[in-house]
Each structure stands twice: as structure tokens, then as C-alpha cells.
Image (cartoon, rainbow, N blue to C red; front, side):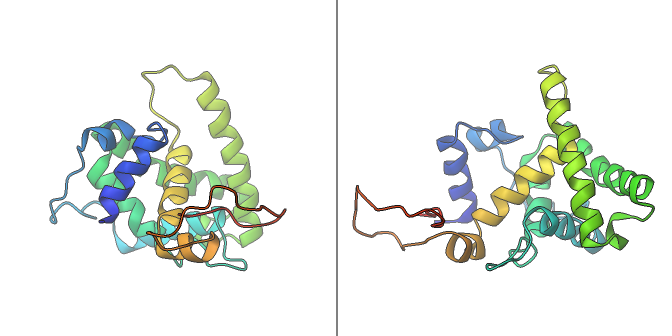
Length: 189
């Protein structure tokens, strides 16, 4: 199964909870090779990798950077987001860097891991407050988009599914009663 097909099915199963989900569910993703990554430079991808790594850092398992989540985000934004959401996402990258510079005194790429974590925690709180007050026709907060794509990209990657989660290749046997011990990893399959 191709990754794109898997993502569509995940979106259907989760009720389309992701930004841009209407495109997943309608199969509206572009697959034209010339549009993939067209608006993103390697510096943008590196920036998105660092944002994703701050959200999901490497610990006992690989982090988001190891799963190349920055590249995943660019493909999803270019191929599956509506133009208005693409604009919010791309402008959000600039806003995030400028806000970090204002709050921390340095741009996001030059900030220490502690500064990045503190900043993104505050930005996440801002995004949640925005989501609670926004009208349905207003776009999602740019950080909400980045966070959702980080989680989706990581947990659907080989690194996330096989090293951060428990994984049993399918087809496998069905066991309807699996013991759970506190601290066990969640299942990827």
C-alpha cells in the first residue's frame, strides 16, 4: 500500500480531524511531480524539521527529524492543502520565526532547544485559544497545522511506527485480549 493511500484511510478512520481533511476524503491530492516541494527551499525544510524535532524530539526512539517530517510537511501542504491553507502555513513559518526572535531575542534556528521548547509551548497555548474563538470560516492557526502534520508524518513513518510504537507486521494473528502494562508503547498496527 502506498503512503498516500494509507494517509487517506487514516483520515477517513479518524473522522477527517486534520486540517485539509476534506481533500483527503475526496481524494483531491495532486500527485504531479513538478508541484512537489515547488514553493519550499531546503532552508524551509530544515526549518520545518527543527520545528517538528522540537515537538517530537529524539529520546529512546528517533525524533521527527529522523523521520524527515519537514519534507513530509512540504509534500502535504503542496499536494493536499487548499490555496488559502497553503498561504496560512507558509506565512506561518515567517510568523513563527519572527515571534521567536521577538520573544527569545534570536530566530528559531539559532535558539537553544530549551528556548525552542518554551516558545513552542506558549505558541501551542495561543493556537488552542485561537481555535476556541475562531469562526468556522476562518483558517486554522498555522502552528496547529504544523503540529498536526508533525504527528501525522512521524507516526505514519517507518521510524515512528516501528520504533516509537509497538509494531507487528500485518497480516498477523488477531488477539482480542492483549495485556497492557503501564508504560507500554501504543500499537502501530
